[in-house]
Length: 144
Length: 362
Image (tube, rainbow over all chains, first blue to last red; front, top):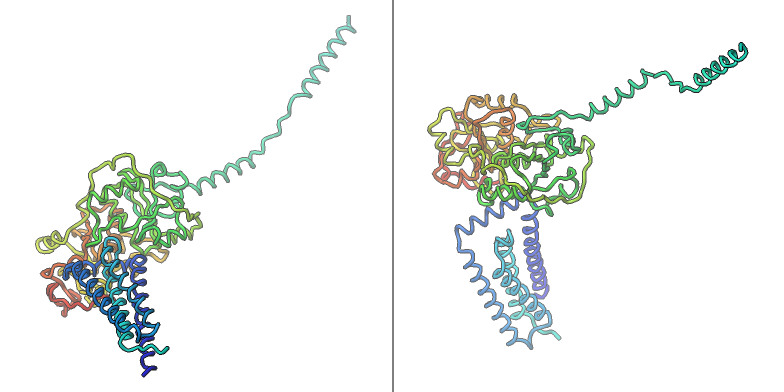
């Protein structure tokens, strides 16, 4: 069971890293390659036409903050039962959630061509971290 | 008395002899040698001398561009060289690696808006002209990386539309410049803002661009009008959209095929641009001719500028560019389209709304 948890942890962390790397790649190529730039701009237009993107961004930020707050509350309640690793995961969770919130509220597609793509990817990374930390709080025990 | 006379005569003779002996002897002229030197100099200057070209000539050789840079042409008094490619200067790797001395980077986004990728408004182009120090009378020399890349043709077209009277494209692109062994530089050059007014209301040639509505009207009501697709055969037949961001494939109903520029159909073996004979042949293949009113189009308006410029420098008028291309055509679900070869039996005629959304390039 321990081995399974470790494997899952590593796999999900790799996924998280890939999501963040993807965000970097999308932004890089959207500024370096015309085909990618036009694709991103075209998708921006489509999404703006179909969805209330600004409202959705704000709602998503609020949801992620709320989820992170719940995880921190659980962490406080179970603080004596969790190991140091969970505290580290919580720290990363706060960082990623805070970063997404800052990015979502201060950015725009006018400032950053791939803004909508990056928003989705950063939110995904934050969500993955929140889930990982929640699992850690609930499952990981302090073995010291 | 006699002795005295003889003495005087002797002195005179001796004086004359001395004077004659001291006079400078000029070496006989070696006429053959000097003529040889003069011929060599003439030959050198004749070899360096590059003939002037007409204002309406668009595609020019690197020798001519070099002669402008060297101050040997009328255009040398007022010219701008534009290295044309997509992206800001810090993303223009080709420009940073090497460019023609004095060349300024022109981001094609400067001449195209981001919604439909059409030529920007008159006000925006006017501001761009000011920012780049270009007036109606400025000779503007555009160049891209090679003969197939149509970035310079796109910029050149926009300049002609605006009203610049002397627009050139380095035939064959930067490749021909470096192949000719001319100097390059890596220094970033910034444009000088124009002090004078542009000289004519922009656009001086609005007739060069057709909108989608105008194209629809002409297709429906003008039998002499030909909408010529400058796209690949696969795009023309509706097998692919040709773009990663365009989901639908096909052509406006009534379009004929004029071959693609990206596959080298409009480039000679040496990279230079083909002449009218090739364009005429392409038109004739599809049952059109130069007697028709022709409007070229492609996906978003780059490739189609090449045959337009070929006709322009040939002195033809009446041709145009359907700037919106396939990209704008598919924005209206009710627009009629054809999928397949219109000369064949299996061509399907339908509307944009009925097309599948899986034809984007992966």
